[in-house]
Length: 337
Ligand SMILES: Nc1ncnc2c1ncn2[C@@H]1O[C@H](COP(=O)(O)OP(=O)(O)O)[C@@H](O)[C@H]1O
Ligand code: SF4
Ligand SMILES: [Mg+2]
Image (cartoon, rainbow, N blue to C red; front, side, top):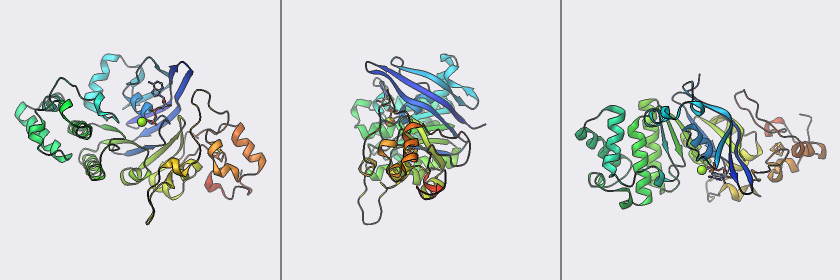
């Protein structure tokens, strides 16, 4: 049994324009001590997937439409609400994209860190303060002792982000969910934080679900990766396999955004033309078809299959892909089917 299992998860949002199927049948597993990367362009459902793990999707307008989330075998989406806070504080820690939501404005930073340490390890006040200050220093906050007596509004966005990361790391959770934790931070601090996460993982055997739109961060941090597109996982595998032998044309496009010596870093949007399809009325066939350069190289019959038949991700296998004509299946017009 994996530590975390997400099984055919479906999450929708009721909007005036219709039901937005933000997550549409996502399955993935995180093993103990593993770092799984979840990557994809903005809007493809990464954060909604992450929030579902702690049942934090705002409802309404959000709704769980199907599937299951199991943590250590326990079904999160159907357990009594009262059981959730214990899991949130002890087993699973989450660092959000937006630090405003995670810190309580009415308590000092020190108070909030102390609470975490008291709840999790029963630490007394003095010891908690010392450990908190040490962790603030480790995440690159100067003058850590003084910061403990400040309130969240007295800190810049980047500082708050680091406090939140410190809080998650202090917890020594069994699973850390990090949703684009370093996007708002400068490159030096980013590197520092990624290093801390790796250290935590080594020491505490914490499993990590690392969410990013940046393939470079995946390469540096993760053992395995799941690539999301338009509410679905389209490819999954070990980082080595996926980077050396991407099977989905979308994955190949994301990899093309990685910097190469002498070239500036490009955003995925600069390398994959077009935009993500509507999640209210997604296309009938492959959701990537309109943007897929690989499809344009296929003969007419095959290209038609792309737009007519929805390619599903096989549930098992080391390196499954949701594509009718994976890139490793030979020349596009060749004889592989
Ligand atoms: N509260 C909400 N109401 C309506 N739509 C939402 C809400 N939250 C997220 N969505 C939609 O769900 C989709 C997936 O969003 P999200 O998971 O945040 O993407 P990502 O994290 O990959 O950038 C997007 O189309 C987004 O507009
Ligand atoms: S199924 Fe067709 S359109 Fe979709 S990714 Fe594969 S080749 Fe491209
Ligand atoms: Mg997000």
